[in-house]
Amino acid sequence: MLPLPYGGAYQELCTVPVAALAPRPTRLTFEEAAAVPLAALTAWQALAAAGTVAGRRVLVHAGAGGVGHFAVQFAKHAGAHVTATASARNLDFLRRLGVDEPLDRAEADLSAGEPHDLVLDTVGGAVQRSSWALVRPGGTLITLPEPVDEAYRVPGIAARRVIVAPDGAALGEIGALIDRGAVHVEVQEVLPLREAAEAHRISRQGRVRGKLVLSV
Image (tube, rainbow, N blue to C red):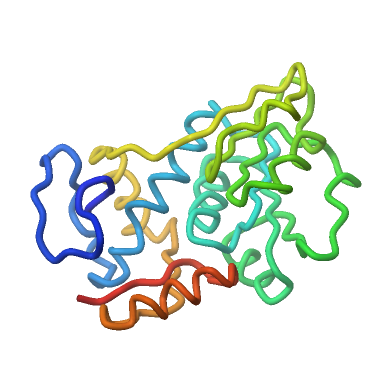
């Protein structure tokens, strides 16, 4: 399995340090395996940045998305109580992934429940700004798509942005979880490389369940 930043622009061949690689999980096709490294490593490293999650309350925004669907599974496997937001059509999907409290992002009042020890923002913008009120004092906010907006920082809450880094050892651990059946890889659609523009159009709609994959 190949993580970024090695590669680029859908090329067929590239040179990669062996330390950045891990074997393809045997239960996955090549197309399914292609959906793993960037999204799964991002989720893995985001949770690691927050410290121990066992026994803690974790909220994942966009829990049915590429990074989100891995994050909810990793957090649940680590022993967290997991809440996640998604569109109404994906709430059953979140339940199948083990999410304790799947919430309709369009309808749920997130501030009405208990505060969370960790909030993972995979969306940015208004979602990041509103997330501060969902973290308990002493808790952590991890943001992925953009830097922490310092204008909204709340004293007593740790916050940082996580940017994924290559890590073959972590990919190997993720692969082992996948092969044990502890983590599911969701691929919404596999498109041929000639339809890369269509894949970007679909992605921009913000309604992808799991990942889109381009087949070379």
